[in-house]
Amino acid sequence: MSALDSALHQLAEAVKQLGLDDGLHDMLATPRRSMQVAVPLRRDDGTLQVLAGYRVQHNLSRGPAKGGVRFHPDTDLDEVRALAMWMTWKCALIGIPYGGAKGGVAVDPRLLSRNELERVTRRYASEIMPIIGPEKDIPAPDVGTDEQTMAWMMDTYSAHKGYTVTGVVTGKPVSVGGSEGRGGATSKGVMFSTFFALREAGVDHRGATVAVQGFGKVGGLAAQYLHDAGCTVVAVSDVKGGVYNPKGLNPAALLKHLRSGAESVVGYPGTDTITNEQLLELDVDVLVPAALEGVIHEENADRVLAKFIIEGANGPTTPDADAILEQRKAVVVPDILANSGGVAVSYFEWVQDLQAYFWSEDEVNDRLRALMESAYDGVSALSAERGVSLRTAAQMIGVGRVADAHRTRGLYP
Image (tube, rainbow, N blue to C red):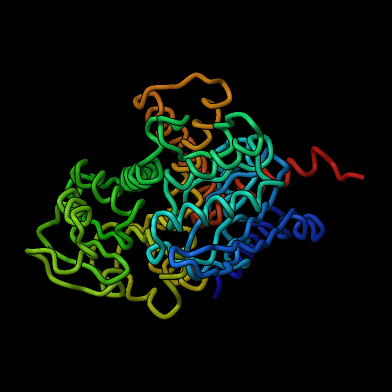
C-alpha cells in the first residue's frame, strides 16, 4: 500500500466515525493546489541535469499552508500529496493555525556537492515562489534537507522581493531568524509522546528498552534524548543496517562516530550487526520507526513485539499493519501526534519572525511540552470514549477541525 493509499484510507475511517457527507469527504481528500516543476541543475563538471520538483498545498481552510521539503530520489507527486494531507491533520490536531503542505525534489542529496545542492535549492525555490510566502505557504526541512537548505530558500525568496523575509521558511539557523529549540523539536516531541504513552500505561520510562529505526535527524536525537532521560536504547539503524547491544548503546557516542566520517552505525565497536527488518522485530518496550513510510506492513506486523510504537516518521505503519497491532493490544502513537514537535516549533519560529521578538530555548521547550501534552490527552480521551485506536482518534480530531473550518467559512462562490 502506497503512502497516498494509507492517507486516504485513514481519512475514510475518520470520515466514517465523524459521519461526514460524501461531498465534504471529497473536499478533504482533494489537494487544493498541486505544482510540478522542472529543476534544471548545472553539475560541477558542466553537464546539465533536469530534476522533478513538487509542491502540494492540501488545505488552506485554517491558515497558510505548512510543510517540509524533502530531497530524496523516490520523491514523487503521490508521496508529496500524502505527506501534505497528513500535515493538514497534524496542524489541526495540535491546534496551530495552518493547513498542510509538502514539497520535494527527486534527487539523492548525498550524490551532490555543496555547490550543486545550493543550485538545486535556489532553483527549486524560484520555481515554487509564486505559491509560497509568509501568508501563503511556509516550507521547512524534511528528509535530505536541513537548516542550510532553508537559509538558501529564504535568501532566494528575499532577493526576489528586494528585502529580507525571514518568515517565508522555518527551520533556519538562529543567525538568520531561526528559533532556539527548533533543531531537535521533532525528536523532543517523540520523547514527550513516549513519556505520555508510558505514563498512561503505568510504566516508568526509566529503564524502558527502546529500538530506533532511522538514526538520522529525528531518530538520532530522539535516541539521545530518551537515553539521557533514563531509557535503555538497545538498537538503532540507518539505511545500511543496524547495531544492537542488549545492555544499551550510547547514542551520543554513535552520533559522534558518524560526524567523524563513518558512513554507517554498522560496525560500531561493542555491538552486534542487525538488519533494519530485525530491528523492527526486537522484543523491546518501545519501537520508534523514524525512517520512511510503510516499514511496518501486513507481512511483518505480527512479528513486531514492541508494546509501544511511537511513530517518528510519517506513515511508517500501513492500515493492514494497524489492524494486526491493534489486535495484540500494542499502543501506537500515530505520526500526526508523535512527530508534531517539529511543526509546533516551526509555528513558534514563524510567530517570532513576524513579531521580530524571540524566545529562549527554555520558553520554547516549555510551550512545546504543554502543547503536545494537551494534544495527547485529547486524543487519549477520545480514544477511550469512542473505543477506537489512538490513530483513529487523532485523525478524527484533526479531520473534524478542518471540516468545521470548511463549514464555517462556506464555499465560494
